[in-house]
Length: 179
Image 1 (spheres, rainbow, N blue to C red):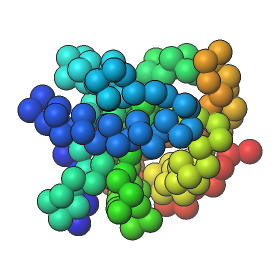
Image 2 (image 1 turned 180 degrees about the vertical axis):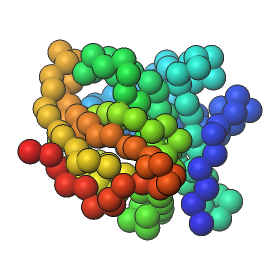
Image 3 (image 1 turned 45 degrees about the vertical axis):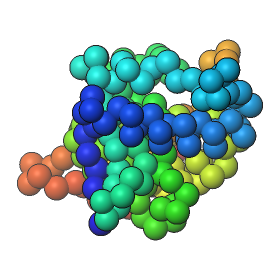
Image 4 (image 1 turned 180 degrees about the horizontal axis):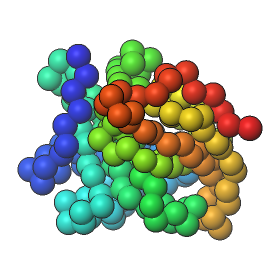
């Protein structure tokens, strides 16, 4: 069973450990190097406990750590300050292709109805494949994707909305890309 937990300040060390696994994997895509202390740097983590529009989550499967998500309101990549932005999302390897990521993503999106942005570094094919499967499971009226170059990176940016009906359930579960 997948459990999504809103991480507390006391969970920061656990999230940081998972973040190191994520950054190690991501270094194969972006060429990041470890700092002198042998760790990858991620300067934004502490902001997730100090800013009200940032939300850290941990995922567990049968009580064991399985991943994390860092979600925030606003995306500087697309210049949108209203949408929720999946800043980082990671599932440990032994939990992939088991529905862990998709289940966690659905739970998080349901906490924040409205517009969403998911951005993926162009060329990160595994992540692109995951998001192309996961987004339709929550998008209530299709989704769009576009390539964006922000001057530092090339991104594939997905945008979609999640809406709750008056009855409290989500609209159709088989959304397709918008044209």
